Image 1 (cartoon, rainbow, N blue to C red):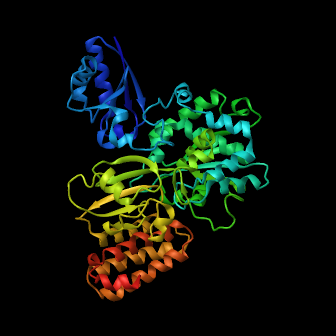
Image 2 (cartoon, rainbow, N blue to C red; image 1 turned 180 degrees about the vertical axis):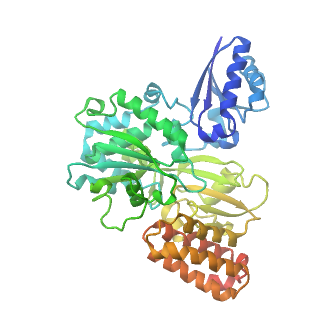
Image 3 (cartoon, helix red, strand yellow; image 1 turned 60 degrees about the vertical axis):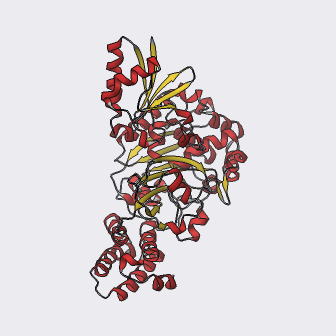
Length: 518
């Protein structure tokens, strides 16, 4: 008898014992004389169930999670005999949390072997690249424009417009740069793609290269992601040997190759011009714009810089068409967004859905509130520089413009949940301290303003001239917001001002004063 098991090799699953579970299941199978084929997949993103063991059956995969190494024999017995197991979750595809999602970008994560190109092809892989080669560069760009895809890394700039700009810029050499320096708190979508479905990123970058006339690509991955680095290196090597990368992409007249570069751990290198400086071998310092990277980017050449999720969305847009993708979402926010629930969320993980779901649905319904049962007091959306939203704003739809209208930002789609024990003055201080530590130091508002911000918040906490210092803090935030060269200094005021506005009691101020000042 032979059985086939799927166990994530995803860093999140490995952190809670997935490797030990895989080893124990192999040993238990050997002890029973059962042949077992263990495939190490990516994670499906249901992190409260990790390690999630899936077994292939004639009726689909059944799951067990969270699994422990000492339960291996019991899990194996349940698979072989069909007996109940306390951690059995039944048919994985029928788990409500997974079933209610709209998985486009993450359609293969947790399903395929990330190091099998055959597996990738068997699950609709490379269809986007094949169509891209059929329709040609100009039509590819137009498809992206019409899809409404916007950058999934922060500002939400239309991806197709960026590609169109680079395509129209004359140069002998152009580049595609993937920003995989995923450093925001509560975010892990980029890592999940690279570890669980690396070929989709390779396909997306190849499509981008053909569209704009670029022949070389770089994936800039943060050093804290060794599993992702290994997965991408392996997938690139496989793709190159298969002719997907190289002088003739899939036997076409287009050339495109790519490689991985590893960052040194600077948060500011998530900003595109700092990233370019680092790629060129220099310290990651923000460049003044203009010129834009689309005109003068890596090594002074026209460059497309997109994050992982943006590039990984290109294959399905090309395979299924712009209209298919555009039909999901609301307003100017089209397609799906992989939303990452973290912090105190009871059901933490990745939830991909169309734009338009409300923040309250995400936190209370999908996220299940807090794991300790305490009330949710605030959520931070968009990383350490995102605004804090109180429950009164939970009717906000997940939409770029809706968040901007309430002085927030979606960013990379991370949602960090806080219960009612959180001190929002300390959270505001953390934002300033974080900016001070991570600033590249080039511009004064960010370099000096963040340090002064920590000092002012400390004076407020000590009760020193509280009202006067609150005014100084607000003024300082305005200076940083409008005077900083990049989003590190420019966005730091979002968490600070939102904490001041929505939770003034934590700063010892009356709610009416700040509400009126707003």
